[in-house]
Amino acid sequence: MKRIIYCTLALLTCIFLSSCNNQSSEIGLDLLDNLVDTEFMDTISIEAYSMLEDTINTTNTSANIVGHLSDPVFGNSDAGIYAQFTLSGSAVNFGDNPIIDSAVLTLQISGFYGDTNSKVDIRVHELTESLDSETQYYQTSTVAYSPTILNYNTGGYSIQPNSSVVVDTGVYNAHLRIRLTQQFGQYLLDHQDDLNNNLPDFLKGLYIEAVGHTGVCGYMLITNMTSALSGITLYYHNNSKSSARYTLSSTDKCVRFTHLDHDYAASQSSDFIREVLQGQQQMGERVLYVQGGGGVKTRITFPTLEKVFEEYDQRIVIHKAELVITNVDPNEKYLIHPTNLTLQGIGKSDSAIRFLPDDDFYTSAAYYGGSYNSTTHEYRFRITQYVQKLILQQGDWSNSINLIVRGSAVRPGRLIFDGTDPASPTRLRLEISYSTF
Image (cartoon, rainbow, N blue to C red; front, side):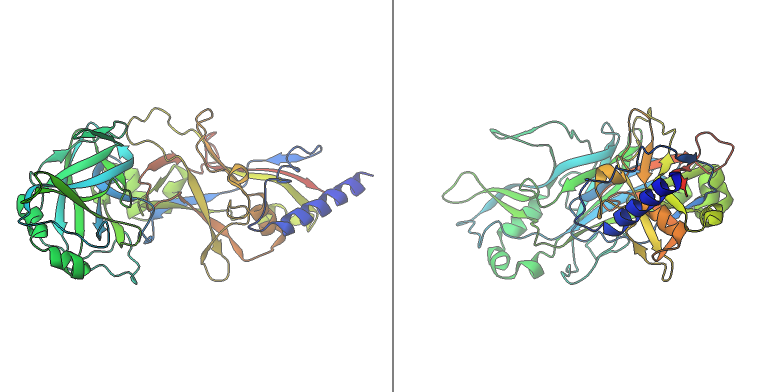
C-alpha cells in the first residue's frame, strides 16, 4: 500500500512539474508542502564565491540613478544619468524679447540608498554627442559631453525623499531642484526656432553626474526621469508677461541611461579584495557578497546534488527545496540589505542566462520567494522544480546559478552574508524535503 501511495505522489508531482508555464497561477503550488512520511536534508554540499557582475543594460529603465556612495566593504560608487529632453507640446513660443529669470533642472525622487543627511556634489553638463534610440547602453557606456558645468552654484545637495516641495503656491511630491546658469537658460530662450525644428541636434541632452559627498557615506538618488516633475524648467518674462515658464521634459520616448562606476580598490575589507578582486574562490566558505548597480554577484554550485540521490535512480520526489540566506544584519543604518534578490539559471549546453523553472516568470512571487523577511532576517528561494530536474537530469540547466540583486539596474543596495562552511549554523544552505519509493 505504501508503494502505491508513493507512486501516486510521484505521478502527481510529474504532472505538476510538466504543467507549469508563464500562465501558471498559485493554485496547486503548495499541494506537496506538507505531505507525511517525508525526509529532510540540509547538508547538501554547496560551493559559492562572489565575483564582479557582467555588464547590464540600463537603457530606458523604469528609474535612473545619480549619486556617490562610500562603502567600507564595497569601496566607492558613482552613478550618473545621460538623458534626452523634448518639448512639452508640439511647439514653443516664448513671446517677444524673452528674458530668463531662472532655469531649474528637476529630478523626481522615487527612492534612495544611503544617508539622506549627506550632501552629494551633483553636476550637470550638456552632451556634445547625440543619444541613439537604436543603441543599447550599459552601466559602463559613456557619451561625450562638454566639461562646462551648468550648475548656477556648485556644491552638495541634500535630499528629503519623504517631504513635499513647495514651489510658488504649489505643493509637489519630493524632488531635487538644481538651478542652472542664467547663460544656459537664456541660450535656450534665444533659440526658439532650433527648439521647435531641430531639438535633438540642437540640445542633444544632459549628463548629470556625482563627483563626491560630505557626511557619513553619501547617497544614491533613484529618480523617475519620465515623471512630469522631472525636466528643465525655464522661468522667464517677456514684453507681454511678467512671469512665464516652460518645461523641456524627458518622456518615455526620450533616450536615457544610467552610467555606474565602482572603485573596489577603495575597499577596506581584505576578505572582499581577496575574493572578488583577486579571485580567491575559497573565501566563499567564509563570506559572500551581492551588490546592485551592475556590481557584484554570487555564483552558487551544487556539485554533489545528483550523486546524493543517485542510489534512488528515478524513485525520488522532491516536495520542497529552498535555498536559504540567513543571519542578515537587521541593524545596518545606511547601507541596508536589498528588499529583493533573485536567481539566474545557467544553461548546461551554452552557459546562457535563463529563468529557473521555479522563477516567478513561470509561477508567482509568493511561491518563488527572494524577498527579505524582517522577522526571521533571511531570504528564501523555492527551487523545487529546478532541484527535481537536476536530480532526474531533465532540461538544460547546469548545477550552477547566480544570486543577484533583483532590478540591479535601478537598485544599488548590497548584502554581505555567511558563506558555505558546513560547520556554520548560519551558512548558505539548501533545505530539501523529499520522499523515495
